[in-house]
Length: 416
Picture 1 (cartoon, rainbow, N blue to C red):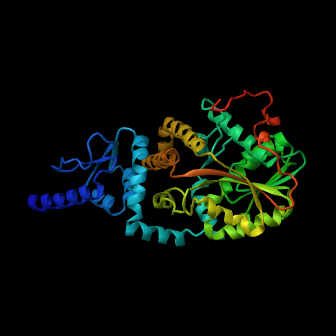
Picture 2 (tube, rainbow, N blue to C red):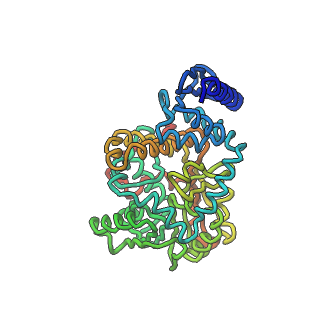
């Protein structure tokens, strides 16, 4: 290809990029040939694009192209990736909304990653069945892979995850001897906590083979086999009657088309007299989940608006007792995870390679930015059947010292 043709192609691409990007909160630096013209306003966070093909992809489908190019090493961020994403997420989302290609990708993903019984198992396995040694590198010692609760900003991740489990148990008002069913139990930390510190009898369901195996080993080590049963099965197969239903971090993997069926499961397990808690990533308005996240990190994921999540409860007459948004807590949790991940990046690279490291760095950083900027929310929703007699008079019980906290450091609240 002659220099004049290359120059014309570059000129056309740069003109297109200038028109699309305009006053976007970042700069693009072309990193090929003799192109030295920076795209975007000066003084903004910037990244270098390796070639014409990558720049053209950014113009067609900004989020998906950025993610894949960053993972492939064809985009290099000049400075702090988190700062770049903090400033850019709103622009990316608005641009994606006008991208025909992005809408087509979302339409296609919704079908090929549908959370049917087989589809859910496939989707969950791709993320959660990675070797547990990988997750041990950057999660807390109890392997809690959901939003922590920081009673004070200075709390450590371990303290905050312990506080989150107490927060959930207080919201459920658990009493010794009560029965609990947990849908989507991760590596088992909450189920074991409810049994060990609150005297509950727990049946915990999960379709991740790796997580269930780890949870069973930990249950044996802690001598809780008589109180906790970890079951490798789909939430749709939960049967039996319980005092309480709890789901922490699973609703995002159910799919809005299955909320009515999940509600049916909840009602047949706790009836009109029980109560429960849903803890889930959500949004302020209904919107498709990130295509790049669904393709590369969380297949089948969907973060519902609050009104969508209520479709789990409304058909069965459940009363919503309390809604709390812990968005800032999830941002802080992700900052902890990201810092730990970066410290272990060389080990992760030896396990999976540098592209995996960049993909998970982008996932953790993008998630932190999403919660920091309000693109994503973290809802805890407490509900009860119409005949439930365990409805608190005030919220004072939420902040009373739980039995599990005896002997631990006491934290004041951030505003006190």
